[in-house]
Amino acid sequence: MIKMKNDISYIDALKKAQQYCANEEKCVADVRRKLYDWSADKNDVDKIIESLETENFIDENRYSQFFARDKFKFNKWGKIKIAYELRMKKIPNQIIQQAFESIDATDYFEMIENEIAKKFNEIERREKDIYQLKSKILKFGQSRGYEDELVRKAIANIKL
Image: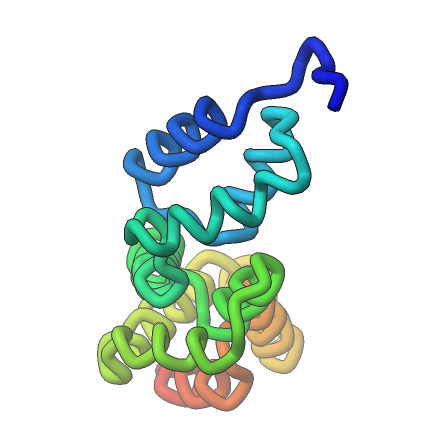
């Protein structure tokens, strides 16, 4: 096999991938993309990922739980948006559902209520039509990945 100037050896790619995974949680899709960015041989990529999973550098369950909790807590994302992002990283639905179990339902709804109340206070001065106001808040909730029924319930709890 002729080595291209930019190709990285199996050992170097493995070490680099281990370091990449040691810094923060990564999923298989992230690591695979990074290996291709480093010009790792296509035949080595699967072996490297298998090795990383065996050595517990990569764990899709662990990654999904951290991802879901972080996006909920810090980005104030809803479950729909979190699930979409995880699916884009090729995480199976079963693992996504398990990740959602790490988010307390009460905390989740309180976060939605707080975000909806903040948005309501932000736009109520500009929007006098109550139906337009509710529509804008619903669209905001959808853009954050909140479930429509929870957004409607949070809107109903606002003193209009």
